Image (cartoon, rainbow, N blue to C red; front, side, top):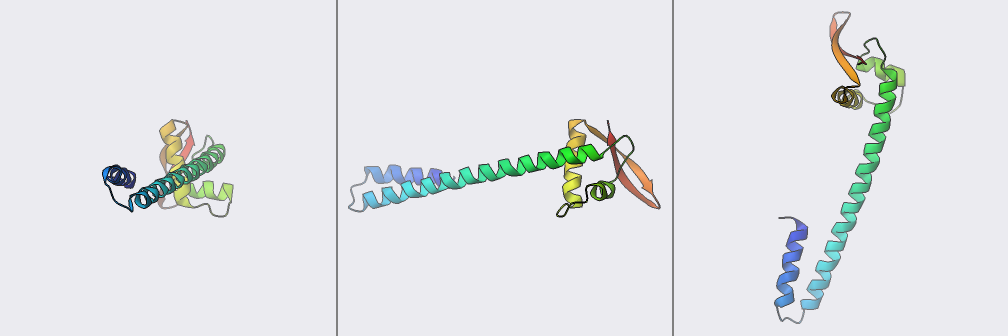
Length: 120
């Protein structure tokens, strides 16, 4: 049961009860529900902004990837941005693979085997 559902139950019960503090309780419930609505709206807005930023980063990563396989480290070096981490790049490359824009294969660099990404 969510908070909103609990507040709805409280309001429903207090609407039928005859108490002198009934209006105070109903007003408090109304304020709490409004606060929950504001919080939800803010969360949706932030999620939308993050998604847009992620989409933009995904496009920049896609632009860096060419016909030759490039590793996550190579993508990081090519973009050379502060705050960009291997985890962020890996997440976006996985999205690109899932979308069918990019393919991946194992690439050997020195004695290490890394995942290389290239245009599909």
